[in-house]
Image 1 (cartoon, helix red, strand yellow):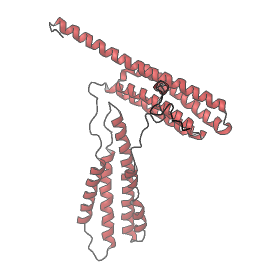
Image 2: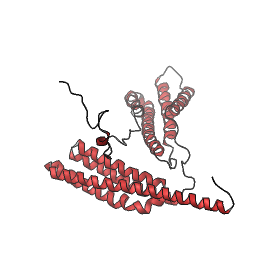
Image 3: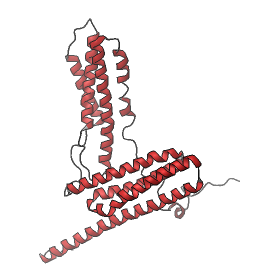
Length: 302
């Protein structure tokens, strides 16, 4: 007799069972900002290099410079897309210090112009001219800028923010992100996709704390030990676990490490909730003070 499928994650499943409070495996997953469109821009330099090898000294030199320029533009574009994604992910952020996407557009146009000039040098029947390369370069620059956009050119949500405190938070968060990156590199040595996903889940919880501190730099003093001591300890534990588990496949080591991640995740989530509640309490105090001041001035609020 047929039996209807059901369970924790089915549409008709028991809601009480599915609401366990834990984050899903793909909750907070981040898409790589530099996708196929950006990676395809590495390809034009490859045939350009091979086509330039038999063009004589001048043609080869111009072709190689054009290929190097196009490759540099692709690298800058990829980093610019990542910087823009980080800018968009934050509620308060400074504009990128280096406008990488704009520089990538300019270098793309310059590389295209050099490639076009090389082709004119190779064609002995035609008189080499700068008009066509300049036109090709200008078109390539414009098309690149339209396709990928420009860098963020102004700060976001920085009104009334202490820039000195913001810089302190940026340095601490940057170091914390390095710890998370080292955790990711270390856990890959364990060769277990499930524990890699568990580490990624903890990292998403840790990044929630990062974003909360960035939104209100006054929270840095209370969260500093989480961003430094606790994350450094988590990184060291991950490195040791990966080395042991890769050699022995010890089930007890896996259970202990998973329990450690559970404890760390709960503590980071609790700290984030506490800071959010403190921020709301500060807002309530500010509102009450403002109301009392208005009442003393004779303004009646409904």
